Image (cartoon, rainbow, N blue to C red; front, top):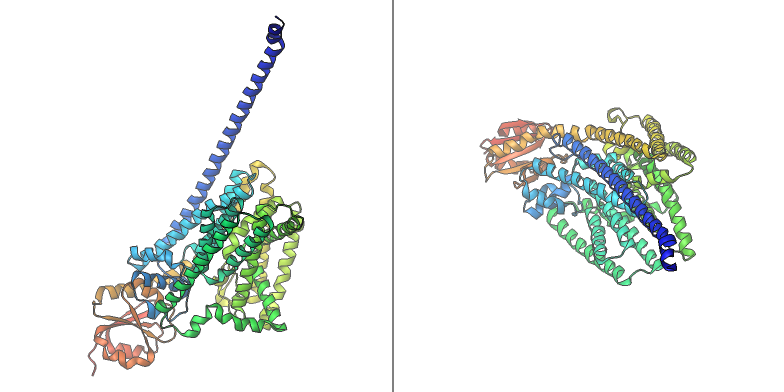
Length: 616
């Protein structure tokens, strides 16, 4: 009876209380799941909205594009793809220099599937757009792995800011390798995070392949490859992860890099067989040793420092100041990493990634500065194009830095002062080096106020600095304010709007404008298709201004353009009946060509002559 009484009394209430707790916990879990599901659904909607904006930008521009914006750079990648398809573009390709072959792996199936140049080019732009969409998802993965407590909606918006870097919008709409490099660096960063968090064989192989491939796309990315190798070696020494998987990574990397070197030799031999040896050497590391010897002097070191300051100035303004914030945060995390390694404490993965990013950016700035050393144009001093494929990841780092900073106003004040102080240093370097000319498309991220036809260098730097400081303050303020309340996250969409407007402004100023000329030049290719027989030969009369012939070779596809120097004029006269001659619009041989041929078609950049007269 005693036991029964106890059970009916004390124990009965305990069971009821336990049941109440279990019921309460289940309600809390259910509410948490609903909240998580609701937040995730909201974040997915934001991601989808960003993708729709990206599709809108693509749709807005694709009809305005039919070919190259930057020649001969873009053509070099297509020439390698043409060799893979079976086209012979070697004579036109040899007018330029060697360009790395890696991007041609993407362009080859496009060129095989689309036989006309306009469709092939637009298909490549479509691939660039899809890579940006994939990068958006990779960025959310990076944030989720490194900063899991970040609100999912904010993850989506931060990822959007990183992807909508204005110069990436510009690069998306042409077939320079830059858009591919930006995607690959995001991919490498994500794979490195995955590898460090949980080393797997598959991740090791994919990371090695991505590093080898980014190097094959452009040799200047050697800094990224070296940075990753150094980071992994230090990581192994500090944390002693699985030796076998790390060894597998290095073996795979060695195999992939060796294959890349072999393909490079084959590409140079087959595609650029007629190119000048000095032109080939200019884009290779072998020609840089002479510059390094010049730099190893007091004057050379000063010039190199000016080059580095110019790159930092460009990257800071082009990123709306987020590059500065990101670098500051990365350097701070690297100091924390060093302290932990010395004290034999386990560092966080974000600290290892910070080391990788610091080494990569330092290496790329030095490589770019050395390569351009000795150039005498203003844009080469602030030439950030070689380094800004790293920028989307640094935008992410900059936003995280502002979000976590407790000294926002001191930070933005220091950044503003440093930016202002850089201007007189650069102007002095320009005057001392007697630099002139500024190609805006080579410094696209700060070209908004540039007037190429009436260049005032001092005015340009002053106006750009003022505009840049204003956008820096606005960007920092919006990010800082968005972190003050859950309902204020939407404020960062203001940054997205500024980025989109800036990206379209650059595209309109360069890409769309150049393509208006390209559309007119299409008439030359159409005329050849309509009137040239299978036995007729297409010849380009080379008078030294050869860049734009690349566009026509792209449009003609499998029909090879033969290059004939002007001193072989008599050879041209002998076969006038069966030849279609393309000459530059300012050709010195216009009178002779008018006399030799019955028909002439004028375009924007070229004349086309055919239906030659009988010659004795």
